[in-house]
Image 1: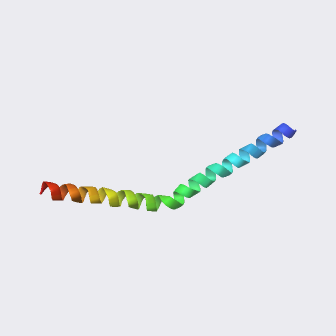
Image 2: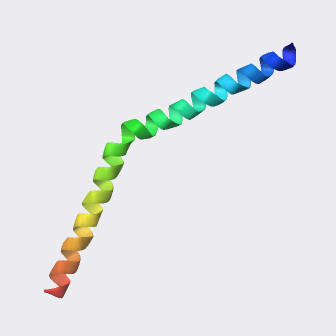
Length: 52
């Protein structure tokens, strides 16, 4: 019975950890995406200036 309880605790901890990681990225993704898009736009503007 102790082994089953230990496995249940480990499963619960694992699920909480996975939920925390998913929640973190769900909350942070708009900021990450905005940063990527801003850098991409900056690179494209630099290339346009250099070519023109």
